[in-house]
Image 1 (cartoon, rainbow, N blue to C red):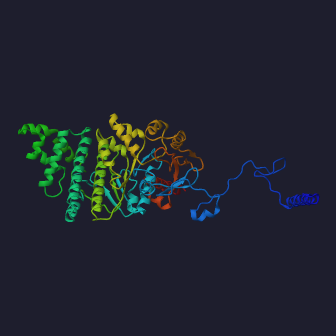
Image 2 (spheres, helix red, strand yellow; image 1 turned 90 degrees about the vertical axis):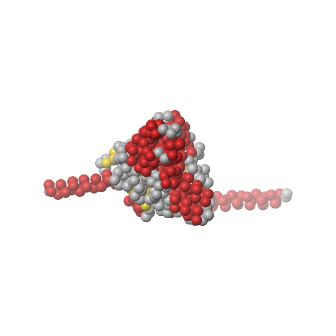
Image 3 (cartoon, helix red, strand yellow; image 1 turned 60 degrees about the vertical axis):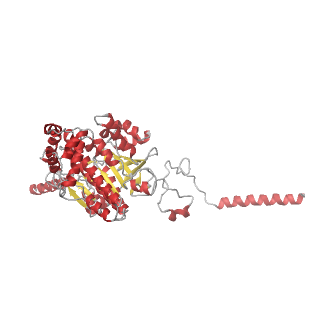
Length: 523
């Protein structure tokens, strides 16, 4: 390279540097992120977080790389917002099983201390699923928490209780009519299956009522006698039988019943064999501890084409046995109706319907007596094959494990282990070992649940207690995946029909009106 050319490049490089320096002098000087550092300057210790907006993928795609995903599933019923990120969480057992393929079983188990919103989150799921065409079935509402919701949906409200309504446990429901339709359409095998299912359900309910009445299950011989007596009634009785008819058959002792009782041709032996069973059935039909709720014809048969709630709130909490028996009877009737609907749909005689079954206060039925866990287990094990989503609700794991035998406790824990998802609200620290034995929870998740069960603080400005810190907050767990903490947020319409403390609020309003009237009189 010649000396002249090298000198020219050196001059041009110098000119470029001078030009850049001139541009820097003309450019406005910007402070660093925290401002100018130093005495008399404007340094900021706290840097305000940037504003965030939410939108669909189509709306924010042009903002790359400043857009990020929500990180929470968006398939199903909108429950609320992620507590840490504010992202919307959509969650329900049917959508996560059928559409999102996130769980292998369309069921959820909800745990949490009273007053933190267990019924509220299930009502939100029921409301959203109804919009997807799924029928909510609340098989036993003890408070009631769901009556207003089902009424707002235009559903069926079935009231049960002493003197308020009756549920005949020997009523096959719509099974007889469905079997006739199936036979007319040439589905003889399906018709036989429907009737066999109805027979088994009736026998199971009679055995369950005897278990609650005796606090012990019936013997094998007694169950065989009940089975043969029910078959005899189906062949010889006109109309729908009741428990009194079953008692009369056992007392009279037809030849078929005597044969399975092994009376050896002796009346005295037959009476001795059936004496205990006869006494128990008299207690079920004569207004004993369980009253006449199950011994008369059903006052309001259940529909299969509309949302349904069994309102059993009239039964007092002191009548634990009657509550448990009524819950089991409602569950049996509900699942029997679902089986009929599925059989007709399989045969092409009705459109396919999916149901969202709510089993609230599960612990009451489990504690009714030895053997009740098996009855509940038989009802809840086949929900996937039946096309049914299920929500089981209880307070704590201690409720499920406070059973007399280790076998029953293991089966009750299986209800939680088999659930597709477990939703937990605030729980005490003593529950954590039992809970983590069924579902794995990290230490951070356990601390979160324990913090949510703390009592509410006193608000000096209003003179009342503030809301509990865990009200409406839940952790959604699916297997060993990290839990999703969500804050359930209700709309104004939902708040008007989801007030489980309405009686207290009405009493408070009456008290305030009385106080104002007294002040006016004094003035």
